[in-house]
Image (cartoon, rainbow, N blue to C red):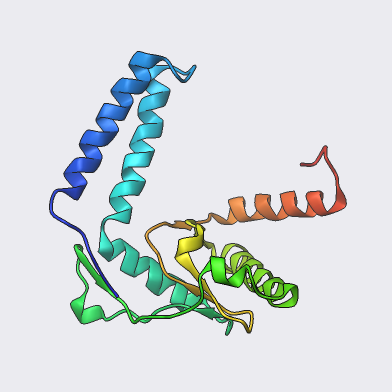
Length: 181
């Protein structure tokens, strides 16, 4: 698989974010001050720039590969010598789409859910990372309950304090302790 960033994409991000900011401030669609809008748009622009720098995506993939010990999760191998900030080359990892997997028996779909949740919790609570772009096109599915992961442009580092808060939240939810939540 070859991903190539076309020239001018990062310039387009900056101009599109600036235009969106002007529109939001002028239209008063959001009941927040201009400074808050600027802060949110700066965060969005930073994340979009990260997603278009394939050195970052390669580092994200390598970080996830280094901490993945789940045999049900298949991450592509990068072709390091062909990767740069504008190009990412990965082995092809074929799997079924979500649309196809939705037709499988419930027991197979349950195994997929188990694998996805196990992998997500392992990332956050053991390794302090999170694949943070969970749309269906970023995953492939296998009838044995395995999943393939395709896109690594948005991987977040989770501070230990945040992971502890997330753990406390999930435990409170499991107990239905609404005041703790």
